[in-house]
Amino acid sequence: MRIPPIIVMMFRNKKFLAGFTILLIVILLGVIGPIVYPVDPFESTGPSESPPNPKYPLGTDLYGRDILAQFLQGIRNSLYVGFITAIVAVAIGLIIGTTSAVLGGTADSVLMGFTNIVMAIPSYFLALIIAATTPVRTLELVGLFIGITSWPWFARAIRAQLLSLKEREYVYLSRMAGYGWLKIAFTDLLPGVASYTVMAAITFIGIGIGGEAFLTMIGLGPSRVSTIGIMLFWAFSMEAHRRGVWWWWVPPGMIMIMILTALYLMNMGLDEVFNPRLRRG
Image (cartoon, rainbow, N blue to C red; front, side):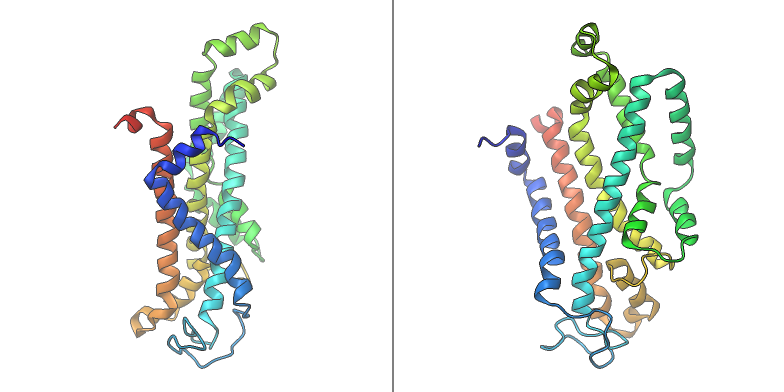
């Protein structure tokens, strides 16, 4: 089976490869870690705030709960929220941006007007309002909250790119051949924004992870689960950083930095791959 040239170019890019490698390591930690280390992260099994030792590799928190168990499950759950955010935001942005560009006229005015209204309100503020009205917040709901408030910039970007693509000769030929706009959108227009969509999805993953941490830090994060945001929330609420309990906040802080750095490197690498001017430079 022949590997598509674009995939080869992506993995030849050092920035993308470095980011992908870091993210893959983090994903493996989140997926395989809880299986290899099947400890209940909410069960008090050890002494309070015990430093790292052979029995508790990352120590325990104030309540004697295993921090490594919280850490591994927190990685998995935070990534899960990030991926849900990306799926929701990309789907909404593509639907609204594509419909607006393809139909034009009144539909374009209404959809872009709605997009501008949503964009004018800070996305985290909207997510905060929605989350505050929900008594039990699951990982899926938190990802949905952030996703449905983060899409406007992507929808506007997709609309702008598709309006440009609509003027291409091959689109005119499709129209002359009698193709409907739906078929033209899927066969001629959307493939032209595929690379940008991938880059946006990577960005939305970071937005979802950061958004979950933000909501958790103000007490509106997921309920009854472990995430990186929840670990940081409790560590700083109990002033672990001031009292020298570094093993409570350093691991989740470092993994958060690793994830966001990996996503940033992947986006930079993809920009170089898909942008000929950067590639020549």
